[in-house]
Image (cartoon, rainbow, N blue to C red; front, top):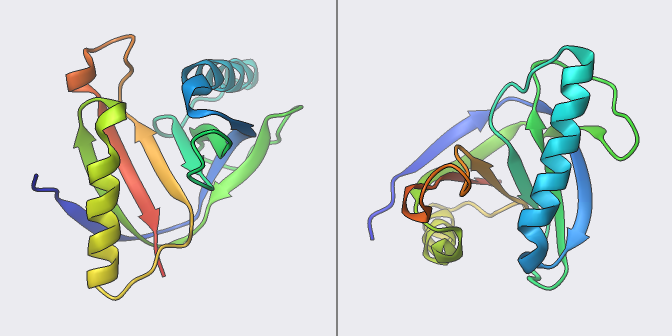
Length: 152
């Protein structure tokens, strides 16, 4: 499959997020809880997300994922409880928009890693997925996910 990769220089992006550990099978439940709590907190403050929800993957152990779930925000805001002010760091990144089921994303990751290596970069160790729609709203084949690798 042909993938279109975009290399950008990202400025720092403040986020409100919840960091947790979970197995991949429990991701939908964790996403629902975290996104719901963060949206409720933003609404309480009269704020809105600056972009779509994301997950930062700090490892790829499918039985014990270290993840950060959240929303980009337009300005730093105080956290509350498990909701923390965090950031997506500034720097170079490569991104690819993927359309299709989440469970079929591995080839995108493999192609991105190959592109990163072939172009003389190395990944920072974190991968981001930004979700432009939801399996509750569209068929799996219509899911839009932007996969982002910060690189050095």
